Image 1 (cartoon, rainbow, N blue to C red):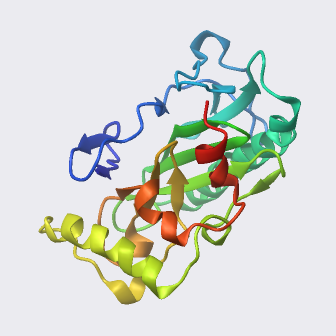
Image 2 (spheres, rainbow, N blue to C red; image 1 turned 180 degrees about the horizontal axis):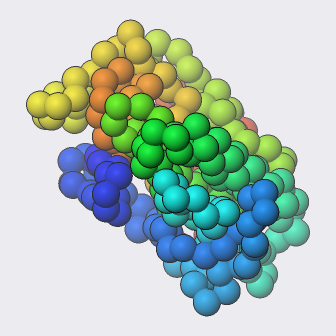
Length: 267
């Protein structure tokens, strides 16, 4: 499956490989959160309740509303995680750490765009930032979220990209690709075999293997998703999401990795 992240509208999907997990919930609705002198209010009226079967957490969107500037537009939403009734205590240890990291990521982007807007003010260059998120995994002490980011005013054209945040809540730390799969040549070849047909189908974006990186990912209950944007593809392309069944990647799985819970502890 491939997702095209657009700077002008919500995430679009097209069926290319396999069904994406039905648990993902997209959030891009304004609320209020503090950056600098801004005010903060939780989005209690727009809370998102996780619909994933067996979900242990709900996700509350928090929106950042910075101090107004004539040439700056900001629409930023980030997730705040809460445990649900019956969630095991061992699966809630890292919630506070996850929430801090998600907030830090979003507020950092806002501070950067505010600085850019100040620099662009003299030349009256419109400056904008949009950040939304989508949840993929909310169970068994694991949370996986993708942020979709569009920045304008920092170059000759708007830049749209996506980044994943996958957390082991039992250990209280962010997971890297090496925590999940062996990062060897065979693993990368398996990914390339899936990625190549998807990118070749687009006249706008072609794969540049020498520029590929593999550290931008999210995980669903049954799938592994690579997020490919400018940095990975090496051209001015919308970010694409390439999905692979976890079962297909089983030969490369790290023994006793957090994702092993999805097979051994799945409810």
